Length: 148
Ligand SMILES: Nc1ncnc2c1ncn2[C@@H]1O[C@H](COP(=O)(O)OP(=O)(O)OP(=O)(O)O)[C@@H](O)[C@H]1O
Image (cartoon, rainbow, N blue to C red; front, side, top):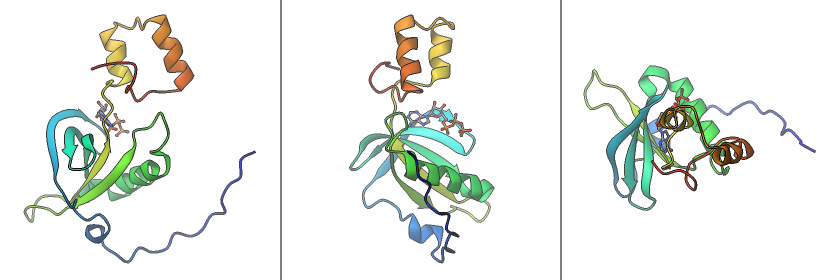
């Protein structure tokens, strides 16, 4: 049986985003562009402790609410076997007065590519065994089964 936690009014966060999401203690590098999403571009990168990761550059100046919603989701569900793990987020101040503030969201790198890529690559003819596996999973991170 499922129980819902009682709703509590969120406490006003008095700290700034730059205080909450401090830049990493080590280095986070970005390499090739993996894709573009609603909240920002995603790069393959390397984190000093996690190794190969995906880094989403989320523009908080443009739509802070969507970015925070996505972050909340990742913090809550990132440990699920079908959802990329969330490793942390780092605040990047604007470089100039005209540029934007960003959060660099560090995620588990999923090397299998997207379902969309798989459909295109197989011309819509996903092998039956793979299809069974995908349906059973209800989604996929692509870590085990497919290679890019
Ligand atoms: N953890 C990851 N590992 C590998 N590639 C990723 C990862 N996350 C995203 N990508 C790549 O970046 C693309 C954009 O991902 P993103 O999650 O930002 O957007 P989306 O899910 O396609 O759309 P939306 O932002 O609207 O939810 C994906 O299609 C995928 O190619």
